[in-house]
Each structure stands twice: as C-alpha cells, then as structure tokens.
Image (cartoon, rainbow, N blue to C red; front, top):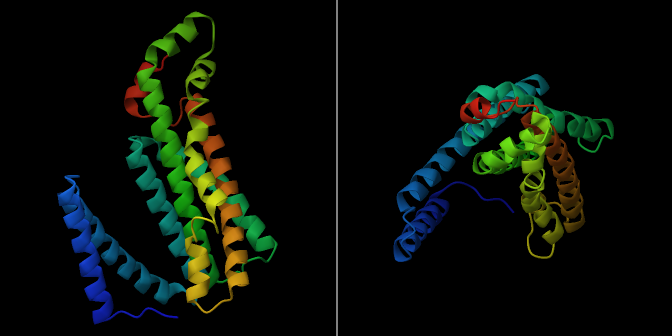
Length: 252
C-alpha cells in the first residue's frame, strides 16, 4: 500500500485541518490558529525533509551529515523548550550519551544495515524520542526547583551539599519524564500500533516483520531515554544544565 501526493490527499488534509479548527472553536480551546500554523509548518517541513532524504539516501556520508543536522536541530529545540539555550553543550552530551551506544548496538548486531535508507528513519525515531524525554525531564526538574527553592535552602542549612539538595527535589521528577514512553511500550499492540509497525505494513512487509521492527525500535527508545534522563539528571545536580535564573539562585 502506498499513499501518493495528489488531490485526494490534499482534500483529506484540508478537511482534517478544518475539523481541527472547528473542534477548537466549539469547545473554546483557543488553539485553532496555532493548529493551522502547526499543520502548515509540518507539511512544509516534511516536504523539505523528503526532498533532502531523497537526495542523500544513496550516500552513507550524506546520510550521516543529514542525521547530524537532525541531531543539532533536536538539541536546539529541547534547549529552547526547557528555557536553557546556553546549556546546549550539556544537552548535546546527555542526548549523545543515549543515542550513540544504542546506535552502536544496532549496527554491530547487524539489526539494521549500515545504509542511509535504514539509518535515517530508525535514528530519526530514536532521536525524536530522546529529545522528548530530555525536554520532559528538564521542564519537570526546573519547575520543581523553582517551586521548592525554600526546600533547597533548608537542605543546605542542614549541611547537605548543593548536588545533594538538588537531588532531594528532582529525584522524584526525573522518572516522570519516562512514564509516557513506558506507557507506549506497555500498550503497544493492545491500545496502539506505533509508527514503525504501520510503516513496515504500508511498505508491504508482513505483520511479523512489522512487529519485529516495532519491538526493536521500542527497546532502543527505552534504552536511549533511560541513559539520557540519567545523564541529564546528573548534569542538573552538578548545576551544569540549568536556565539562567536557576544558575543564579542555586548557589552553595
């Protein structure tokens, strides 16, 4: 099964976007305009991505360059979302710590071939989920540190070191960033059929092949997110990956 661009797809997209806007107005969510902007932006970005992938997919070196560009964009996006743009080196370190070993396992085990046509979609899925967990952990941890500034100062007054005081606040927040992905893993095949599964099926693969690919991707996502969340938490405790306001307030 293939879905080719054309008038049927265009009509469906316009209709779906119209339903989104009408639903927003009906229940007064106030996100109609943002939904239209997001939809148009997604269509434009995916069209550009398709053109780039088509151009580079035949060369492993160009594919690697494209993946590096995707990684850089993921770092920039997560730093912006957590309000810590100047901490991009630490965000890079946390995300790379998760992605690199997982990708190494996939390649050394020959689970995926060392080809652009395989690397770009698989690494893209893993990278997107790594960015998401980095954002969730950062936002939850930083919000807790702002709300519980008094607890941090009290911990210091009791003789705890700054990293220990920070850990007292964020320790219960870090796992929250992993819960959405764990729920996705738990419900795969029962409540949801994730993207890799659907992609293999639409590409003409069997249901068994689709299930195998999806399980592989889910395990890879769990591994990279666990490492990234752990490294990010360590960097936050060390007061490396922090927004400017927290960097100034979390003094020893």
